[in-house]
Image 1 (cartoon, rainbow, N blue to C red):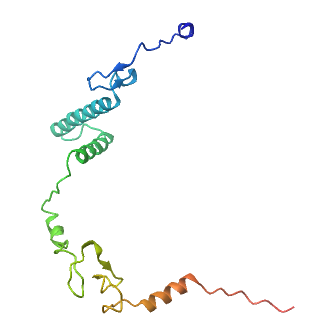
Image 2 (tube, rainbow, N blue to C red; image 1 turned 90 degrees about the horizontal axis):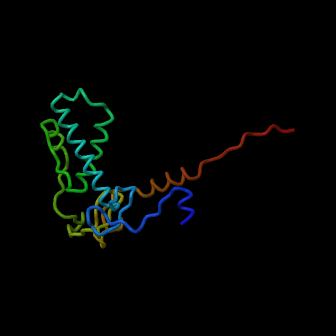
Length: 170
């Protein structure tokens, strides 16, 4: 006790419960809140700042804010959206042409030879098709991939020819 009087530090009298009455202990560093309540409070403050700046940007036409704040605000928005619910895709008139070009997945995965449903157990071949367990080998289906040429190319790349310069005879 004498050392605390000499240094001027005060030892806490006992554990401090969280101000929000959540049942956990708080600390003076987190304003007498537990870590979870403190984090939630900071997140709410950031969202309030974001809302105020976005309203200000809408009213003023976006010329009054700095470039650094929107980037931070966008990051906070993305974090808040990922925690609350998945984002829904939005389409405008310019992206409608791109959406029509995207291929739509048709039904379940099926073997390219016998049309049997394979689901997650399908085997994809190097020719680009999906096959069942019976047709997974290249001799069981009419595979268009040239394994021999691919093997030759792999060997030639792995083993380059090294030739030494000719030496002059002494």
